[in-house]
Image 1 (tube, helix red, strand yellow):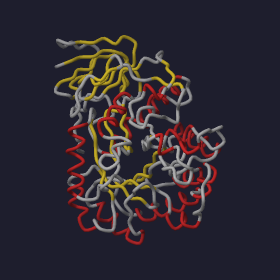
Image 2 (cartoon, one colour; image 1 turned 45 degrees about the vertical axis):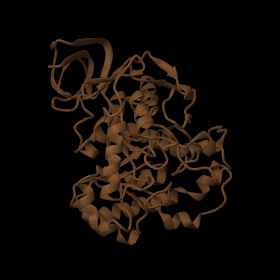
Image 3 (cartoon, one colour; image 1 turned 90 degrees about the horizontal axis):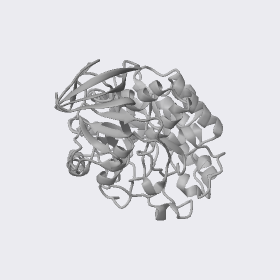
Length: 427
């Protein structure tokens, strides 16, 4: 063994004092007593699996003034995320074998943590889905327009899903119905207007269509960033092959909050009512929600300071996602075991990767957590290029130490590896 670490580790749903052996980047043994040449005893600190963020927009290539794989992965690492999956709405869009390959090469040179890359689906790549599947981590379909998103005719959706089902790759949906969005178009001056132009009926119709379209197909289907009580109620009766995620901003913010600088909270789907927020939060403990995803979508302060109608939609969140909820777990607002399912275990299962659990044979992606280390989130201490956060001054608990494949990536609040340490994660 290369390394053994000792502490209170999360094993099979409970915390237990044990030693974890690591060899060649994998967990090689878990026992009460283990010793290697290098042994670290973390005492009563918690050892949990590192987080997995299935939904980020690192803007690389084409919009790297907002973010790139270097800054985005650095933010992920400091937030306890050992693996991220990047969305296709870059410039150019990630919709061809070449653009997927280029993005994998670029991330491989820049990233501090492991990563995956999605392929977008549009009307021009329907005949090469099998080829795309051999390169990408999964597919993203936008049923409604959002920032620079690939689009596909909905009338083709059943045929598209049949093709994807043969690849055994997951498909993720932006679930807002475009026809319904078109009915509500209008001028926007604040977040209430944005909510009016993207009402929950858009999400409700879209989710119904997804459920109907995937009926009878053996395909892993994920509905991204669920935001409404109407959508939640539909998903309580969903088939087993459909999962759903929710973002920290939809779980923690509502339009009833006293929000200044409202353009900074403009996002698709929109932040909704206190009623929606509370229903979604209750659902993460009850088990209706399968995972938490950041939908990290950074824009610069200058872009967000434009008039509301012109300001882009999107919020940063990859660095604050897990720390926010570790604090809430300490305050018993969410079960810690449930949080580990939401941010570690279930994302790994959806993407079919060997991470997310402390088990022999899996990647040694581990976090050391000291629940006493409460801090206030400050933009100046975060690592995204965008330079701001919707959770300024919120309480959080950041990991004390981050391991990726058995290597220390974050220690003493400093990065310990070089760009390019991160690897493309294959199922």
